[in-house]
Image (cartoon, rainbow, N blue to C red; front, side, top):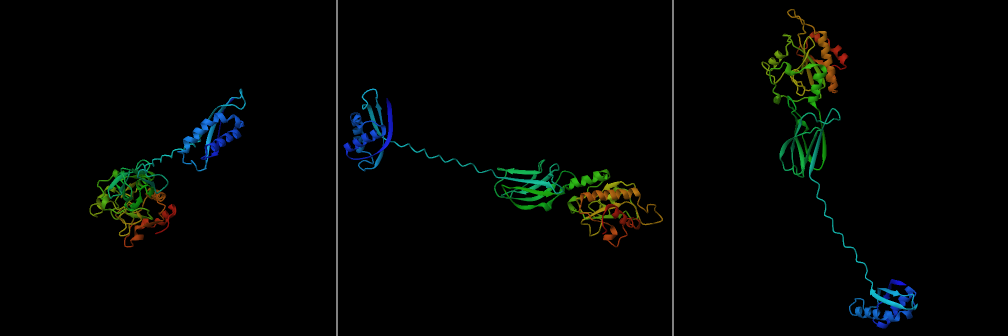
Length: 379
């Protein structure tokens, strides 16, 4: 014995008796119970069901099929055909799941902009030197920003709004002198991007030449402050030019500084390096700036003064460069070549200004041998 339940389709009819018979027949077929055992227990609930819905149900009197759920309790211990209880109800289809609530759209990503500055000489970032970049932000405001230890400048909302960023100027102010990189100005970098520029680390190269070649830096002897703001920049050198001191045979770098920045009116010492008879190498003009050693033709030339007067004259004794002096000159040139693969030629002053006797006959005739030793071609 036990409860039995089934759901089945019956046609909705206006005729109460016909509807009643259809329900009883459906129960008999679905449950294997003799219809005669269902008359009495099923009569009242079927009749009540039909009466209640015949007046209100939207399918009343349409003849359409409806789903009906019937359950009853059949006591098999008694009369086999007896149904002790019976109920009927219209099938209620499951309610559809509620429509999903639209997800709140995520907020738009913040406006950001990133620039990484790498050294042009390799794959390292321009990090441990102080490099400042002047930016023009969307809206027109301009400000200087300093690269971090990883060569980066990272701007994020609210420090920046959407639009395009211009690189207005670049400056290395990590030492003396300041080294400008104005040629690296660029325009039109949209926000949301990550950008890279490669800048030659001139200060690093210059310091490496000083250390590798054993150069005495300017601070060792310098008494005057160069007028850096008036000097032109230069780099990617192609030629090394040798000079001599001339009639005075000057050996004191401080006196050369005083003459060049005094009576000659230069903004700085004209030569980039000076080598005395004992082989000592002194720093002259900072290598980031164009020299003043070949009149009207200084671009791309590193000027080296070989101190002494190398024209034979009866009144002086320094007519010939010394071996240690020439060894220092060659060592310096090789160091410069390692830093500037663009250097291909070695010449004397007179090769680029025929009216001068510089670098003196005795030094000039040694230049071909120096070229062979360092691996450079002629002028």
